[in-house]
Structures are given as C-alpha cells and as structure tokens.
Image (cartoon, rainbow, N blue to C red):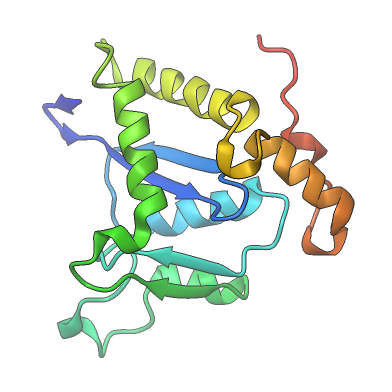
Length: 175
C-alpha cells in the first residue's frame, strides 16, 4: 500500500520452533523502529529469546563503512537481553526462509486480496490475520497444533524455558 508519504514497511518475526508470528506495520523501517520492534517482541513472547536471525539491512546492522561507529542499537537491545544476533549470509535470502514465507502468506491474505481505504484498516486486518494464524491455524509441522497450543504444551513440559506463564496468549472474547 503506497501513500503520499511513502510505503508502509512490515517487520516480521517468527519463532523457529513454535511458528508463533509477531508482526508490526511501520511508516519507516529504520534502526530505531527495528530496535523497538525487538523490544516489543521480547515483551510479547512468554519465553526467553536466545537467538535472533536477521538479514543484513541497515536497520539491523552497521554498514561496512560505519564499522567504527558505536554499537548498532539493534545489537545493544540484543545485548541487554542476552540475545545472540546472527546475520544471514549476504545474497542468501533463503537462509531466513521462514520469515520470507510468512511475508508471502501475509501479503496473499491481505494486500493482494483486499483493498484498504486507510493504513488503519490494513493494520486492523493484519492484526486479525496474525491472531487467527497464531491461535487457530493448525500446522503440519507442529503435528496439527496451533502455534499457541505448541507454546502451552512446551510450558507444561519445560517451564524453566519461560520467563512468564504463557496463558496470556490464549485469546479472550473479541470486542
């Protein structure tokens, strides 16, 4: 969706194990927005994140010519939360294939299928889609569980991996 101000950008995180998705539609996709997205992700998921894999975009890592600048803010947020930040190989987008696949799934379910009169309309639909994906979509890779069910099962088996009880992930009545 384009506007006079420019295109909206989508940040997508997907947990490699549970397939739990977390997304954010932003006006600008700079390093400050990427760092805030990571902070919001850390707050949203009930388990400890130990590794983050990103592409080599300037929102995630310093450019080679900026190597002498202070530490990138995305890396500072990772360090604050004891998260290892790994980068994909340059020109190997398939290394981050789960996110690439989720990007395509989101586009197919939203902007390729519907017209939105406003960014807020798109944001609302995106929120509903991701909620439905996390709470209702049964995935073969999870043996028929939804991402939320997978997380709740992991909580009962390995609670030490979690920082908080994940029962807040269970959707309540919609208003």
